Length: 136
Image (tube, rainbow, N blue to C red; front, side):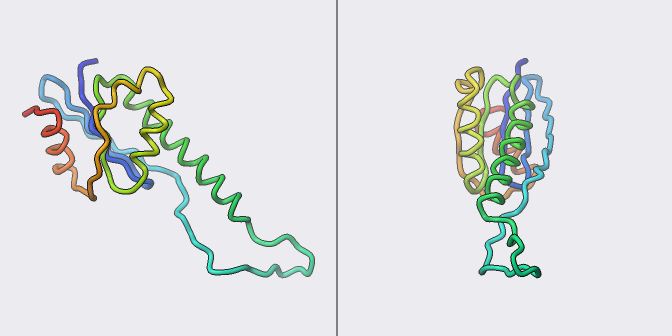
């Protein structure tokens, strides 16, 4: 398939901008089911004297990592037929996704670049991807 992909990603959602060589632009959004990070301020007592406390931080972190892996797998499935992939976005999600993509031998050479960018509107994303690939 002859198309280039720009992928804006954070831990909440991903926007896939597919630019086909005939000039057509396809924008797709993938929502994540990742629970937000909640920092606890202290311990919590149970109502029963010898009952088990609240969910441990390790379990919460493990569940979050599993949810992120599923989110990244959904994205990888959507962009696997692209010729080139440009990753950008705020935070660490783009680097984590890049790490997951590097594990897939067919995708690793397709990653053109990984850049940091702030939150953007859909037209700004499309313009950034077009500018990166130097397409009109």
